[in-house]
Image 1: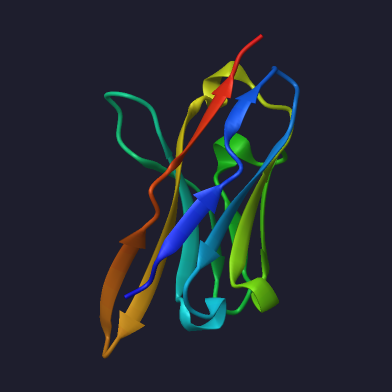
Image 2 (image 1 turned 135 degrees about the vertical axis):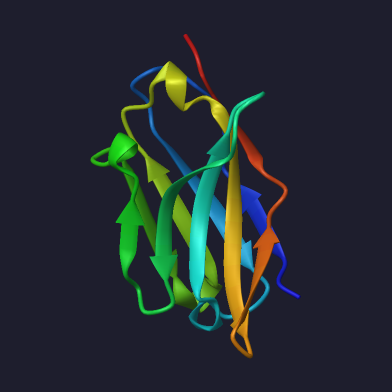
Length: 119
């Protein structure tokens, strides 16, 4: 089992910044990928950024240049830095961990953190 606890969401004005955190109950090196998704009501959950156990990062084209994913391995924590926030970034942001055990992939999810961008 992997437990994920997100924090850092809130209400922010357009143009502002936030840093979301996702603390994992296991070493990030044991997690195949750690990902950030976001979801708005009535829509599917979309992948916005990921980081592999080896440290390779990927960010969705739609948010590239504004979103940055990073990690602190000592704290088993992954971060999502969001800059130049736009109203369309308003969503619930979820942390996801993909774990491989005997070639089977398991997904674990955090509880989500609300980000609201509004003046």
